Length: 211
Picture 1 (cartoon, helix red, strand yellow):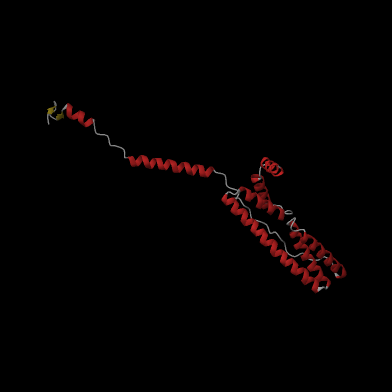
Picture 2 (tube, one colour):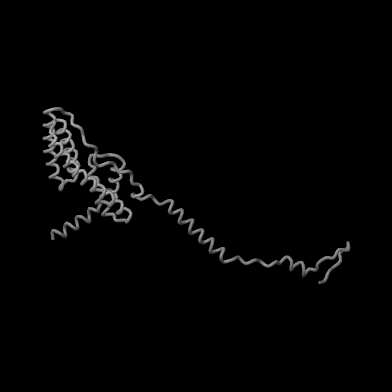
């Protein structure tokens, strides 16, 4: 190593040594760092996209209302109550017979059988009260089971992306809840609008059947 002496007596490094000190070797960047950065960018992008995604109709399902209310009370007394019991029972039978064509008639039948049972009991006809009460219980059980089944099928259809089935179940529920209002009914209406079959497809299928 060659040293030069300055005028003050302190040794000074040669030019070769000074240049070597200035040219320090650069450290190589690890490939693992690049991979980690790429993964972080991808994950961040997915999180942003997921945050912007609109919530599905299934996730926005409001609480469903009760399909059937409690048994109504009879507002009449004596012979008038008995007459109301007979009238309500006959109307309930007629509604029950039309249930196959309009499921909401089953809902009406439950209410009418209940009113009939209450009026029979008020008027003193215990046999009539039991008869109408038994019919009410049977129809109430049937309608509650149907209501639950439609709601379960609708939720499964939405979760599985079965749009046609979701439309069918939402429409069936709206028929049962014809006289109801509120968030759940509005939600069902939104499903019907969203997944309603195209009119063009219906017309084409009808033409094929005629031909």
